[in-house]
Length: 437
Ligand code: HEC
Ligand code: HEC
Image (cartoon, rainbow, N blue to C red; front, side):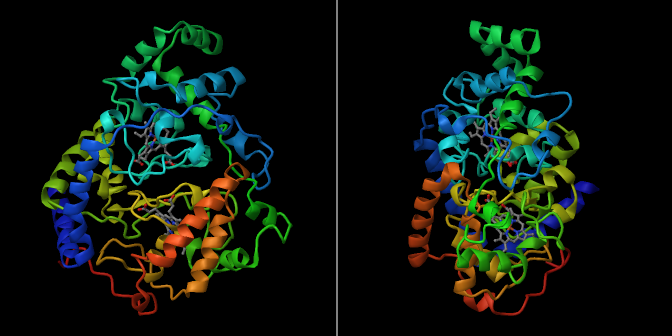
């Protein structure tokens, strides 16, 4: 019964998709590009833990007092030795099946703990379907992953280790066995946990290290805390547009009515029209139905990372129709240096992101969030919001941010694939109902 119903939703979606050129035409090309990438791309050398990898200060402007401590679970208290062990593991390729991929391969401190690619490349040069989010401030995420399929950092860390396009281990125990064969790790686990290496402790150590990655103290934080000259007039206007005509605060704030200067997220999931389901949907829905009912978290992880079902987003976890192609609202801190953007890395610049929002309804999409609508923002408004977003860059990435803003600005002066001024200034299109194809 459930499967039949799901099939109908998805068929509707694809029919909708096929009637709109953009979405259908990207299908084959994306596949071909993916195939080429898999065949030719090599996984990058493992980034080393340099100065940017160090645990961060708890005293940063903009970081609310006590917030970091409150994000530490009682059953995994922080100790300096545990954090050091976690850091070592985070940068160690020996956790992967062929020793070539570490967490830091895709979460490189020099790139603000991302890989700078649209889609990540893991073991044997295999490509996944999702863009790597930053680890910075991930301790504050209510949900981990774009679809929230893990709640805690401990739970999250287990999945890439065994994912076949990421680190490719047959099991967590296989990774533990690798680590347990190394004297230095044996001693470190004994010192920290009082027992030999094992899966749960390995995940605890990695999560402890991740919880030290706090990134606040941006020009915007200084502005909000009273230094009115910390950001320029353009960024100041951008912050106002963000909270008013831009409607960004509908989702990138804890509540719509209060300005939120901490995490810039409502901790919720929305379909904002990115990479909606593309092909062979009837089969996709059937597969999804069986998979979801199996409750197998490893299988769901594989589906999310390396199959077309990835585009189903939160639906893959919640089974709710309204969650089809819904993804987590990401924190916007350091967003300038963590592109490309969206769960599929489909947009290269913040101007492209703004063009997407400005035109509102990108696709004929029955599950589009009601808060997505044409915004009628001018070019100046768009530049201002981008300036505001750029002001969320932490001091560690100041130089990188300056370069990246110049690169994106130059690109935006010649290439604006998402710009659609007629639609941005037009009426809100009616939303198709899920049941009328
Ligand atoms: C091959 C690249 C790759 C490797 C290796 C990798 N990750 Fe990731 N990571 C990703 C991608 C892609 C996502 C998003 C996947 C999704 O949402 O479905 C992600 C998501 C995350 C998130 C969730 C962040 C958020 O905002 O939701 C955390 C935390 C994380 N990874 C930590 C780790 C840790 C710890 C390791 C090592 C044990 C690791 N990753 C290994 C690519 C990688
Ligand atoms: C209806 C809720 C909603 C509204 C309104 C909204 N966002 Fe988002 N935002 C999201 C979600 C959900 C995502 C992730 C979507 C995806 O990847 O499929 C996102 C992603 C982004 C990203 C990409 C971040 C990254 O790490 O890839 C940026 C930048 C962004 N939003 C900025 C804005 C700005 C600026 C506005 C206002 C013009 C805005 N958003 C309005 C929900 C919203």
